[in-house]
Image 1 (cartoon, helix red, strand yellow):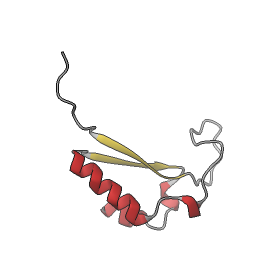
Image 2 (cartoon, helix red, strand yellow):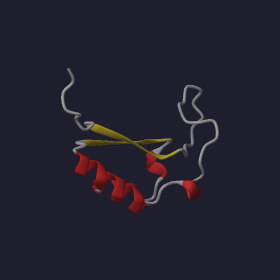
Image 3 (cartoon, one colour):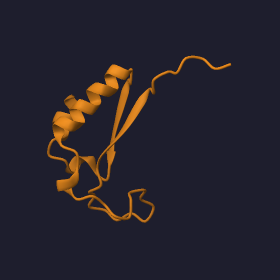
Image 4 (cartoon, one colour):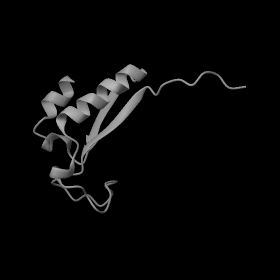
Length: 78
């Protein structure tokens, strides 16, 4: 017997593949997306809002290196 389907507690948001390091253990894909192919600020904020509406409590910002995004402060505020 299964219970009701519960929303996930957290969301992993991979903001960028960009990273100044080349760690051999990195889990980024072999063909990394360039900055001009990343999701824009408003798209991420919309996704965060949709996740909140579903009941998601935490958003984990990941990458590459998220601090390379110029809009990181806006994304954190969202």
